[in-house]
Amino acid sequence: MKNEVGLWVDHRKAVIVTLENQRETVQIILSTIEKRTRFSIGSHSDTPKNLTGAIAEETRDRQYIVHLGKYFSEIAFKIRAADSIFLFGPGEAKIQFAAYLKKEKLDGKIATIDSVDKMTDRQIFTKMHDYFVHA
Image (cartoon, rainbow, N blue to C red):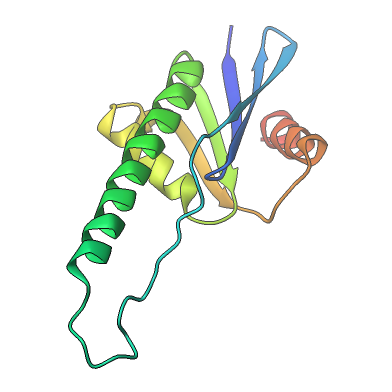
């Protein structure tokens, strides 16, 4: 009984496709992370950097990290029983999630990490299915 998981992840959404005992399931997890916005405060003025603005940006960064941790924790909980994980997606979220799995001592389950563009749920399912069926 092999439990294989394909995980497409970015900062907004994770699509988990599980193959177990000839049965395929799909789960979607949406994040609550707001898009990070950086403001350049006082970059074109002669006045010193606004301390309040710097503190607000630092607070936003901390909130982002907390939300990202909760999001990754929820995904990790859903895939914890996997024997093998095919991790893919656009951008840096997949690398950050791999680092999270390492911290949780689950990184040994990662079969491969692949960079891909944005994909539809069907394309995600097909890519994951092809990876495990043809591997």
